[in-house]
Amino acid sequence: MERIRLALALVILCGVAHVRSSASDHRYKAGDEVPLYANKVGPFHNPSETYRYFDFPFCSSAPVKEKKEALGEILNGDRLVSAPYKLDFLGDKEAQIACKRKLTKEEVAKFRSAVSKDYYFQMYYDDLPIWGFLGKVDKEGKADPSEYKYYLFKHLIFEILHNKDRVIEITVRSDPNALVDLTEDEPVDVDFMYSVKWKETDTPFDNRMEKYSQSSSLPHHLEIHWFSIINSCVTVLLLTGFLATILMRVLKNDFNKYAHDEESADDQEETGWKYIHGDVFRYPKHKSLFSAALGSGTQLFTLTIFIFILALVGVFYPYNRGALFTALVVIYALTSGIAGYTAASFYCQLEGTNWVRNLLLTGSLFCGPLFVTFCFLNTVAIAYQATAALPFGTIVVIFLIWALVTSPLLVLGGIAGKNSKAEFQAPCRTTKYPREIPPLPWYRQTLPQMAMAGFLPFSAIYIELYYIFASVWGHRIYTIYSILFIVFIILLIVTAFITVALTYFQLASEDHEWWWRSFLCGGSTGLFIYAYCLYYYNARSDMSGFMQTSFFFGYMACICYGFFLMLGAIGFRASLFFVRHIYRSIKCE
Image (tube, rainbow, N blue to C red; front, side, top):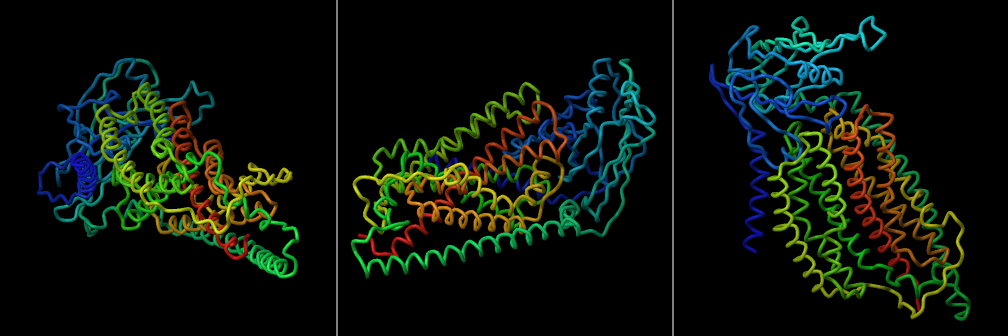
């Protein structure tokens, strides 16, 4: 237990230290050195493919120092090092030489390749992000790509706004007249220069990050977001209202019919969903796997709720480097007890005996595929020498969190679930032998039902999906978490409702194997989201290359699988509540 407490303290301190470092309140005097860190370089259209700044032949007049980073920053691919430019507080400079370098043929070719792929650099000045392109391609009046001219920007102009003794804003632009020709494979001398211009502003320090969050709150963006919400709400209200009306009317007729049948003729043959009351609560096949999926889905639902709470209280402000990754790792580790408790208690309710195997399955159901995907993608990143490759020390830290926090909490939750002694609440007795399921038409089979179940929830979220993808797999900033939370609530309601409706129609056709069907139908939205990934990659993005493609489809597969488990658990819980309710309302012999 002492080790668990130490690990918990370590993880929480990592998160706190990270947030503190990102939200630091620095005050400076004239002439003070303000830290400028070069972060990474990469192709603009491939957000996962980033490299260390000095992997490219930039020069530095002083020894390069690496900044110590928190867990989330490393997971985010940040590798901050001291930049070659010195931007002292209130110190204006004009065309000052930072350093000189003679580029070899190979280095010229490397820069030319980077410029042709729209490589950009990212830096941080007093925790404020800045970007710029490495160079430009001159295509004007040239039809043949072999005639294109390639230029490297060698003069950066920094414009910094300050409010008394604090840095408020920084922008960087390249001098279009200070260019180095990279077209030919010839050695070339480069003088890397920079200018600094300081101006005063009235913007308070507390509002300096608003510049970045406002881009997603522009009126035309907000209109699209609200259109998305209204579109989703109208669709959901119409369809759920339509289904609710049908379902309530049909159920009312069923209840009246069954009550009349009981009064008129007890020996009359039963039909519809009442006919299978002796089978509807028969435990599902592969109940250990089913319980593990339910436990993992419940944990991921809890994780999502906690992430939304942190987002709504403002923890994930723009460029709070790695805060989201830190939160995901910490909260996933701390909520593993929920997965253990849910899976073990439900497994024991289903009269399962091998609860240890069930716990192992629960612990590996989501983490297993995620670990395999990570191993493959980390190997790809190492081969590319990209910053997405995690250092050995970070992998050890994540393993220790898993070994000292996640696993013990999973086991403790499992023991608590096993000892809860809860019994499965079934309103009807289950018969000894299962009834034969009558032949069903093709559209009543599992796959067509999953397609029907996933389409409606997906249609409620697809507009918002574009903005999320453009933020995660692009350079757009997403900060309207309140709208995203409303969309998430709509997603849950629609998933629960459509699954209940399909479960009713399944039972009405005397098919009593609804357990797995309700889970699969609830989770099928995850498959639709993955299908949207294919559309987004081909039609809405300019991503290319093996590394970016494998990262996009690999990690999106894990995210969509997580959605599948979470929404599957929601769908099953809603169906279980519904089935219990309707069978309580009739007299079952």
